Length: 147
Length: 82
Image 1 (cartoon, rainbow over the protein chains, first blue to last red):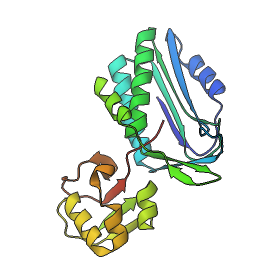
Image 2: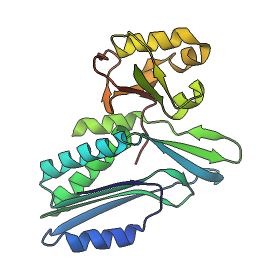
Image 3: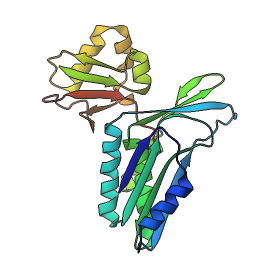
Image 4: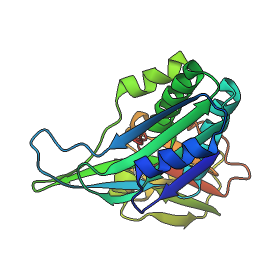
């Protein structure tokens, strides 16, 4: 299991290759990358991601351990950035490795659903006009119920 | 003494990221009432608890939770990671 919370950028392709090479015999690897979305008006100057150092690592580790146990994963990778990002920058990625694809897909979705509303990150969108905290959505909380 | 931390718009509204609070509050809800009575900026930040989440010693919990043994209490809006 590899959990990283970092300010610096990462190369999702290189990370996926390294993860794949490490997960010998896994049979199935699923990855998801979250990218900074521009505003509808296309005027995003930057996105600032705040987090709660200490709790962030702890919350993600708890979620990843649950996924690993529940789907018997060979390996799990979670990388999540904080600090200032620009439109189209990778924010985060998860990758899961398992014997068969269903477990890898389900575990990746589980991880994403829980990271969205249980890992202490807060996004703020800065445009030329204003600075707005991104609000959580009811469906993010609802998404947890299926697990 | 409890270390109280604020994140995102809660931090902005209260104006500081953290402070050490001398309190006899038994629960998070009691601590919130003490803070609200201090100054308007706290009162405003805590006016709608349904818009807030709380963690004790880095674990999410409820406002009714006991503060017994707590070292660190953090208040923040619902999380928006991923």
